[in-house]
Amino acid sequence: MGQLPPGVIWFWPGWCRISHIVTRATVTYNAPTRNCPTADNVMVNVDLSLTFRIGPDPEAAANFIYKLGAHRFDELIAAETEEAIRGLVYSVTHDKVNDLREEFAVGMLSTLNSKVVIYGVQIMNVKITDVTLPPDLQDRLERTTAFKTKMSEQEKSHENRVRVLEDEATRSIETIRKSNSRKLQEIEAERLRYDIERREMEETARGRARVEEIKAMTDADVALKKSLGNETVSKVVARQDAEALLKSTYITCQMMRIESEKRIIVEVKTSEADLAVAESKAAGMIAKAEAEADGAEALKEKRRYELEWEKLKVLETIAGSKSRKFITGEKGEAILSALVPRP
Picture 1 (cartoon, helix red, strand yellow):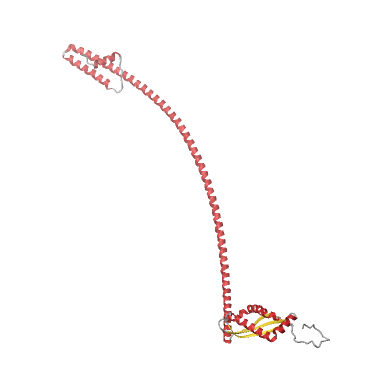
Picture 2: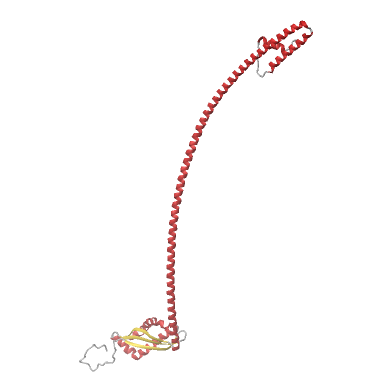
């Protein structure tokens, strides 16, 4: 028992024979499964295609021939694939059956290899070639798929329109933002310009205020000095005016005193002249009285009375004068004697 090498064998022993011929090529096996219920109790047909090979060594081929065989391998593969397909299909609904092809192939490959590797068989690939639903359901699913496709297209078109609108809105918003940013920059620049102008105006106002303050202080200082000078001048002028007024008053008083003395002298002279005239008249009258005394004793008393009357008039004249009169000497004594009655 063993593996014959390739080529012609010229000497073949009679006790040797070829019992089995096992190919080393990859074999494709189709395992269709009919009426598999899904989770929602829909019967589907699933066609499974797998590829395998026997080997790769003579021991594995011997295990396949003497432990399993081709007929039992067909039954084993059919049973295992059908069981795996029915378990997988029953775990999903009918609308998800087509989505499990790749997932089923990976799980099925590992499961089958674990069960047939002891028999010298290697499963190379497992693939679900077709999944068939009932015709009416298939038609509805096709329409549903077409509707979903249309819906998907509509959604994509709607998404595209939404994206276009969003892009336009984004561009519009970006334009507005740029415009607002530019306006904000212009406003900020204008604010800065106004701040600079305000600071310049404040500095100018401060400078003017300082100039006005200095000018006011200078004017106040000048006015103060001028006032002090005017006060000094006024004091000097007042002193000079006071001195001039004192001198003028003194001179006026002296002139008035001299004038008064002159008037007094004139009045005294006038009084003396009047007194002399009165005495002359009195003497004349006395002489006349003496002349008449001889003639008539009766006229003596009359004459004396008239004489006294005349003296009183003279004295009245002297006493009624507004100016003061100073009479001294014998004449003054005589006047006093005349004014004071004798006992």
